Length: 347
Image (tube, rainbow, N blue to C red; front, side, top):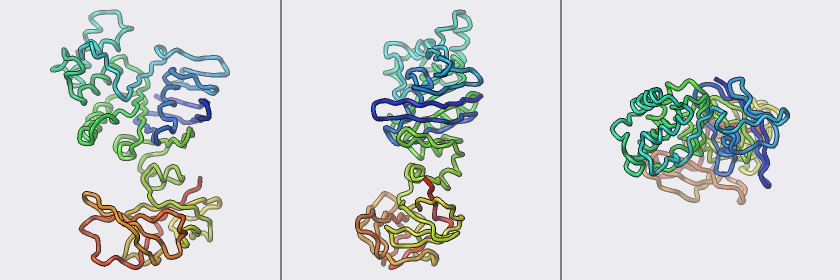
């Protein structure tokens, strides 16, 4: 099962531009609020019409501006799970699921598919309950059952955990991933949470102000984001502009330091990043004098704010994150970072 999206859409001053393939497994759409994630799903679903381009699902054209093709939502075979699940409050769990079978006229088939869905999503005990009388997890499963009972070729999940508390969110991520393992279509999952994307997704595209990055496998993306947007959204706290000095060396003017790198520095490098836990008082490489200027306590870690000697006063402080049991009694005067932990950014 495959999806090919090549579209552009303008909405006021905002411009969406997406060119990406989606295949089996779960593809994450990761980005901050207002970056165009939900707009992308709405265009694929047929709720919004792109200004140009095409959308092709499993060889079938859903939209093509040049050929004047624009299938209505009900003919696209696309399942769309909204943030709030959009259950009908005056209908039972069973009746909500049956709404997904509005195109199936045979009563026996409808009952058989409903029973299968109730069993698959463990909803048999609450089949007669109203949405107000079930848990958040049961509501999510009901909404998902209503979509999948119609056997869509593409499933799109728009921030499916955003309304849940942290404990329930983590539990439902595990449950949902297990349930979706049996689904053989393509899946798009929109989220602003890097942890959620890492837990749930096989591949990820990053949305940044309406522009979507090439799809990459999740673990390599987090290990080497390669772009400023990728570094920010995957959690890098220390990011700065940089210039090439040598084949394995970059200069960071605003930090007043030069770093040796394990990666070969290509022409066109624009910046560097490193994660807050990569700094180390015992590392000799890329070691420079530092001055501490603040701290933040978290339940299990400390975040120490510091500056390199000669660092621009207009720049943001460097973050050093370390476990509480590893905080030294006397803060070090110098900190280093291994060349392998210097991430190079090219756009």
